[in-house]
Length: 126
Image (cartoon, rainbow, N blue to C red; front, side, top):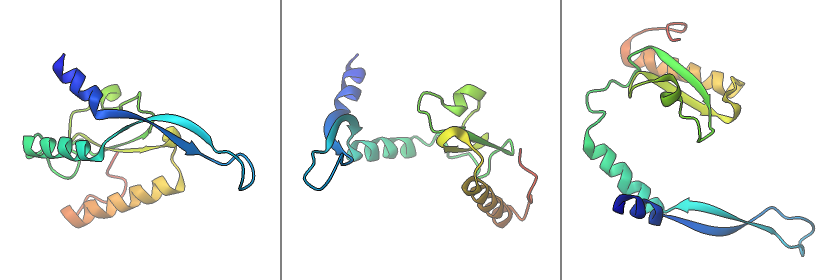
């Protein structure tokens, strides 16, 4: 329970302006958003890095699998597909669509694989 209370305290509500509804003298619409302090995120990242949970993992996915998924925070591709850490590379974009930008990313990842391992080439990932 104490951990849960701490986690909630790390997040805060902010009212921020979004867009302009008219000319320079018009009022901006304001919305309330929930944000987390970047110092808290850095602390969490340091804890993850110190934990060594990825120390034995290779840079390349063990399953030669790349997943393209939506950025929807309600859907974690690892959870949906039952993937363990290191089994797949995951690319998340709006709608989980294969766009020209996604294809460029896949091409760059293929070049990284070739440079790091001397192979495999294009078509060797699922």
